[in-house]
Length: 578
Image 1 (cartoon, one colour):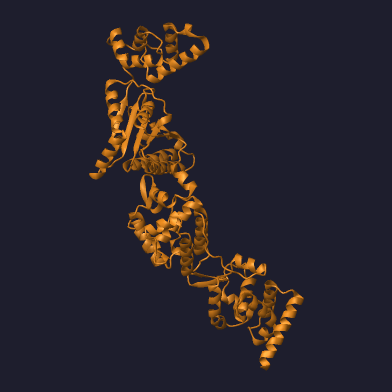
Image 2: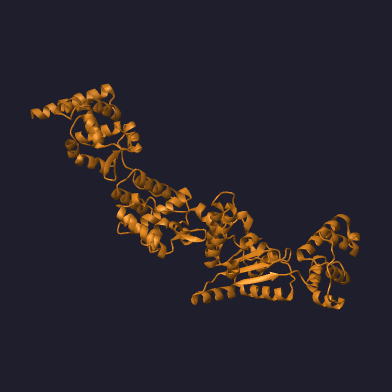
């Protein structure tokens, strides 16, 4: 009873001291640290620091050893790697004594007041800024409970957790526990639902391939990193043997992430790089659908032309071109297209439609694509190949790969497959440079290789237009299923174009113009536009044949007349153009 009386009296004395000194956690810990220096944690030290230690014990619900250890960790809070040896040297006590306090340290770890780091057999400790902040405000530190987050917020938390694991060496068991708790709390999110669908979360843990996928997804979302590697794997997993095994499976394409179509090899110079990976379009669509920025980045095209916005116009072709275009138009009707694609897939053939429209400038190649899109109710993503190229090394290749990724995503999310149009793609399908050593030539070859591979695995409709009629790269010739050459229109076709462009001139004048001017459709359109402008400005008196001939002569750069062969009658013209 006497001993109890002493304790009671000491407690009363301590309370008076606290009130007099306005004791706080930080002032109490400051005194504990000062009194403990060189003390060997002797009984004398505990007696001297009793009322400070008691305050910390009562405030934080810890025992006296834990109170002293916490005070020492606070004093070293700016050191991210505190060793027990450092504390032992400060206290002037043997390491065996510090090791004997491992149970007390484990309790502080369990309450998340300190964190342990294990790196290559070296154990250190650190105190988080959130703990220090609580103590500064004389408050008890309470670990934040996992809470419901938006998908964006979830990825921020996931990213920070991986940072702690990789750079702060958060213990594996604690890392997995926190990751699972974070995901489980937010199981309402589509990202977490899909993790369960693919069995990347199961049995109250996140499996190894799940860790890879969540890690890479966080890199994509938070760092906009499309090319992912395995460099950090050694720090992610429990040991390097597990990390190396997973690396091997990925490099051989044997990971379930690859088999399920969630991860693929990066494409570099048209070849698969077995050391770099990225999330597939399928993975982005299924897992990241709640992230507006990611979904829009995948499916939105500033180059998108809606089929309903295309102006319908009558096209005039030579007989052979007309037959080929009509055949292609019939094939691209939704019913025929769907049927043909399904049948090709059934027999193990590629289902992508690749078309090349080539020929002289102004012969209607691009407009034909637009009219096909209009007739078959397909939107068009019109890309100028030259605009994809960047002055920055490697950026052009990324632009091209990203374009095809976005197109594939749009195909998957569209009811009617859109057309990807590469306009003026002369540099694309020209013969590749052999033994290229200049940076520009290497870049061109690299882009061509990427596009060749994309065309090989295309699911959709790809059309390229080019003014080249010779020197087509053989590899590209093989990749195009349909090739239509657009020649300059025949006299009959020119008659039809003249009549559609300037309907107010007579059939006789049309015959004259078609016979004497070997124009492409584009050149005839230029004359018609000049005529329309002058008609607005000056009226109909300017509409004589001589006026039209004058505009035709202005259109000609080379004035040398071309020899004419054959004859077409006015009656034939009238019959063909009516």
